[in-house]
Amino acid sequence: MPGARRRARVPAAVLLIAPSLIVMTALFAWPLVVGIGQAFSGPDGPTLAYVRRMLDDPYFWPAARNTALLIVVLIPVQFAFALTMALLLRERPRFAGVHFYIWVIPLAISDLAAGLVWLSVFTDRGYLNSTLDHLGLGGYAWLSYENTTTMFLAVVVAELWRSTSLVLVIVVAGLQGVPKDYDEAAAVFGATYWQRLRHVVLPQLRPSLQVALILRTILALETFAVAQALTGRSLPLLVGETYQWYNALQNPNVATAIALVVLAVSMLAAAGYLRLLRDRTVAR
Image 1 (tube, rainbow, N blue to C red):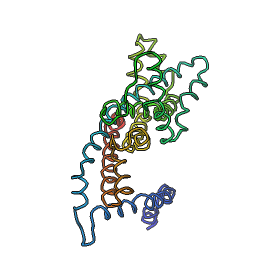
Image 2: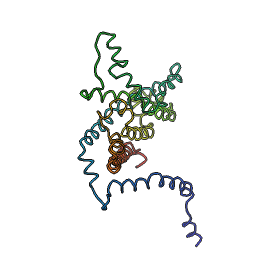
Image 3: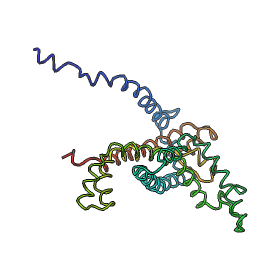
């Protein structure tokens, strides 16, 4: 009987995380249930009318394509920049602290403010065209609806400048936990810099890279203010379409359906990263 009572006792860990579970249920699970109900129910009961309206919208598929393309282009470039800067800081160059603070300044700037900053660069009479005119090269309509490629590149550049600092902070924090002893031992045994980076440093950065990949993919899926400031609806994105349906078109049901698409893709991406970057040695 005493053993049965011990087994029935609630573990202390469960009691400790119970408040956070309650808060997460209130802030996430309940709104999710309400959102699903809003997207799939109408005045006459369950319906797929709002989903069909979302799929038939001429902006939806271009928005999905642009969002996917933004992730495919932006994430690898961001991680390449962030890893390069973090590895440079690891070598302790002169004024390393100053370099770090300069690189993370964009982290303190809001999305909309960053979009307005880059709008002043790419607009027809902006800094970029003024420089080109000064050099005798003439200006270019970077943000014209006729030039979708340059519009997309402008959004990529603005997002790259604004959010690479987040990845940098996570990677720098991860590098603090990588002992230099392993790196130095590999160097003693003749490993090149790239071999040490691939087989010593990056494997130990796996947890930090996991977190950074999940966060940046979710935030890239939610890109809105920067693109809105630069291109308006000329370069549609999924979250921008959610805003359009909710505010301009006054249809929260379709807006919720698009938001659920973003949520589903975010969850699939997070699960994929966790599976791809899991520590197989621990699993065995």
